[in-house]
Image (spheres, rainbow, N blue to C red):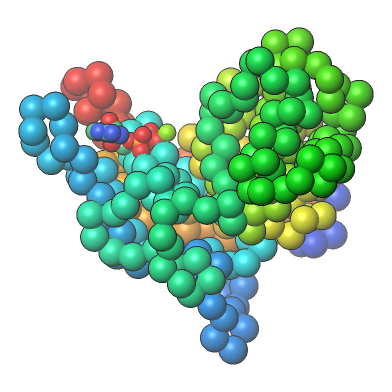
Length: 301
Ligand code: ADP
Ligand code: MG
């Protein structure tokens, strides 16, 4: 069973402020920091008893996920952390409707999902941009699939290019852009479909630190402006604390929820902030055992 903890600091804590004392970051008892409203709210995404076993080449079943129970609120920024091979990507694929669980069910807005849909967009680490199309054509591609007329596509593509500050590059090809700019094209392409849910699979893992910091700021702003629900997978705990309202930690294979943390730090946050680092350290303590299990399984003891 998962435990909920709250990692927070006073709302007035300024950015990059060093707390007066290096006191404990666990300020409240489990579960009491963010009480849910009395009314029963339908979760944006609800995972109930989700398990998934793959069949390996030798024909043996491999339990990737086991009994995941998780509700994501509408408009929430949820981060999922876990060691390599714990089933993070598998979980996002399931929510995206690209694969089906062996057991359990997934609901979006209270309704069981039926395959993929433009209400839930998954951004992969390798982006999947088309090199033969310009930046704007890449964004228009999904809109065409959605059935928008040419004029509408152009207007919408430009709108989202503005949102990610890439208007000047609409006629460039993706090989003419930096890694961070390509990430923003992928983000604009996903956002242009106006999904309710953005699923992000380690999107910034391959970027240099400065570019990643800028994209954190940008993603936070876009999340606040659009109100979309974000499920963000990362193996980087600091990144999870920087971005998430809640961080869910998965165990090594089969992945299941080990612990949940409610992150109450004021925004905007910065990855190098003292309180972000302190919260990340606490989560990392809990993650370490799972990382060891992952390493032993993947590299041998
Ligand atoms: P993570 O994203 O946390 O690194 P994945 O979800 O990619 O983990 O994978 C979880 C486990 O399932 C891993 O052990 C991986 O080798 C295995 N796996 C992933 N996809 C397949 C597949 N298509 N067939 C068989 N095993 C798979
Ligand atoms: Mg993965």
